[in-house]
Image (cartoon, rainbow over all chains, first blue to last red; front, side, top):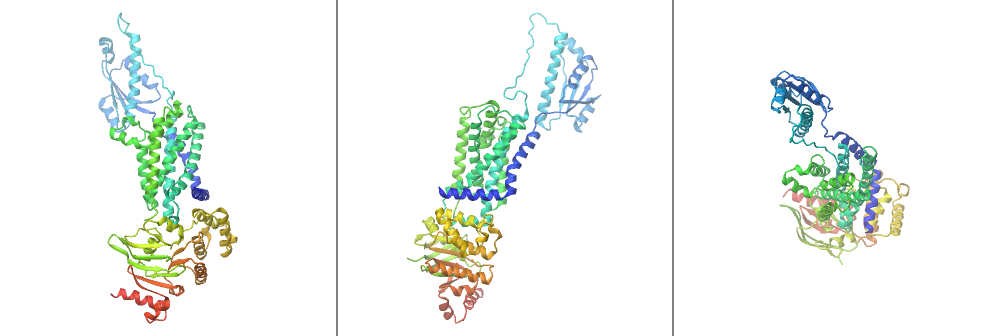
Length: 371
Length: 243
């Protein structure tokens, strides 16, 4: 046990002496948190819309004007024909084409029904989905307006049902509120995992590892001695990140701060353990970097940070049961935004605990004092 | 009890036999020179004895402990100094001594005593709190040797400890080796300097993974009828190159 303290002391001395690295470890995550959170925004704005109006009626003009009043759309102009509209779509000049057929108004009066066509550039599928969603809402709204005005309610006719949305836990649908908790932990994984991996591989490259390996130091003493300093530094980083989340992004903190710290501690033990595990299978810093990046990118893409895990294919979801980032991001969002208690995220706790124990166990097992 | 005993100790890397069934014994308190050309298998043999490499076959005991099953006991009883300087360059001299003292389980009071002793002996008091990186190579090697001796090991393994060091510092280094040996520590040393071979009690010469000769420097010179260890080495090394 005493030997662990000597290693911890030595690591802290080395870390504090490496001013560049220390600065990187403290400032880089905060900067990334700020930049990523501001940039990673799924709100779709400035959708360029072209209109093919072949009806030229009061109704068609009203429908078009509805689009003009919505911030998300920018009317680029009227196009006389479908063909020209298609061309503009092809040239990327517009994102969406609203085509109003001839006799739109007449049909509405006569048959009480009519149709319009939306052509959406769907190269970016999610953007297209959101754009057509917005457009559908506007058209529905228009539908409601003219119904009330022009179709006197007949006896026995069922009044249309209005849907009023209320967004819970993130009432203003702020993307930052949603993204910041996730990005916070993504950065812990990145920094904790990578720095720890590079640290031991550096000892291998310097030859100090061999010198340690001829001492009677035990495997768990070595791993714990390396683990503790990086977990402590990770907690400092986490605190800085929380301050940024609170005071720059105004992310709410509905749940217990203590609970969040317990999870952060557990997650850091896991991340640093992962870094140590990577270092035991790498001989050079390049190898360690490559392995670490490969794993981190996989974890991040499958984590649900950018796209919901529920939409992923079954095999990906199955893979996700061992993705620590997925669990911690759910915990972070639920604790910070919804005020979840330990009982709500207990299963996440045990999943993370199991992964942390497995990874650190593997790291101790894989660490060889002989070649 | 012998300090080191090996019996047909062998290490293979795939088809390559780095160390081929070497058998020898080292007496306690002896300065044992382990000579051979580059790639002769010296470092491999030494790493097996230190518990850094698991042998492919054969037997060996170091300080009375088995190299297969008691490597941790061996490690508590040996010191090791590799070819490459391997103290922490970004720690001060004092911090390096403290760290290794702690790793070997010395008490803090002992560590402080030892630190004062080493600093005085090496006359490093003025630079005790300077980073190790700032020391000249010769001083680094003397410090590394002192750190390897910190826990009073029974056997100390030195892998080319004086490579690249000036003659005066080499001389001082060998004085330190003699002093350690006179206190009963067994010294197991590899070197490429034939004048250093003359300082050893006994010398073995490895060629292509095998021990070709093992005797006192005087005995070797008589056997091969030459007047220096350099001559002995030339005959043995050339003998294989013309085969």
